[in-house]
Image 1 (cartoon, rainbow, N blue to C red):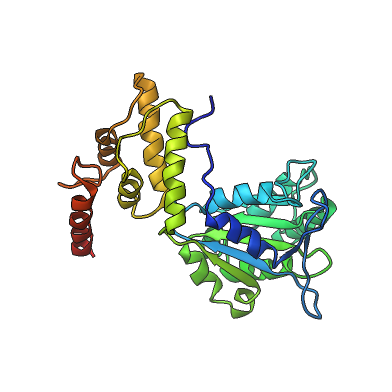
Image 2 (cartoon, rainbow, N blue to C red; image 1 turned 135 degrees about the vertical axis):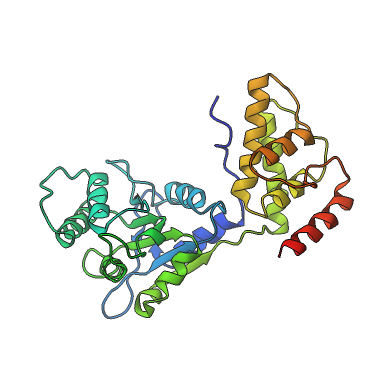
Length: 305
């Protein structure tokens, strides 16, 4: 049985992603054909996409699934797929990132070259493998100046990826800091469409989350608490961050499986919540009717604010 938490929760965001990608990529009627970058203006430039939001809101999960499963795309595996994923570690340099990209593109040649030369080879290989989308995750690290890294040079490189014969669509994902950093260069900022992910869920997404919890418990043969407001309690505990709410569910199911338990109770969620570093006299999982507990929690949050 696969690890707990790998089940994907569909939401309105999946439709939003498909919709906005249709503004930067041309999808063929034949779903087996590659989606190609749309070029604009006299310079035939492409446009990029910025997906931003706080940690845990689901940016990486959304993009990994969407870019891999939407017809005409697919994550590059060395032989098929038209999307290359590149994750930027905090200490990354522009040159080091170019070599990471070259590794993804099966490059085995010499490495005694400048950062600019490495990026030129990378862009050539992106075209060689018919890559339509370069997805750069944790992109805020790329645009933060530091040792061996210059934000202006990195911004210029992003613009170059959107220009020329080998131009492609660049998807950047990261924290809200990414938006602030990109806005410093108005010319680059205008080249990107924006898809901010909010922490709060719509009413339909809340219902979807409740169904997700039930489906996950059923898959792992664990009965969820007999509480119609479990989803609301979880979202309150995570301040609306869906990733953190799913982490709590995962912790509880994993513990139940390890202990041989076949049912979960609110106390199990309270335990996971407290042991995740959340102290306080009141928690969203107290054995109190949600209609009474919710206002008390709101008062506490207002006091903190």
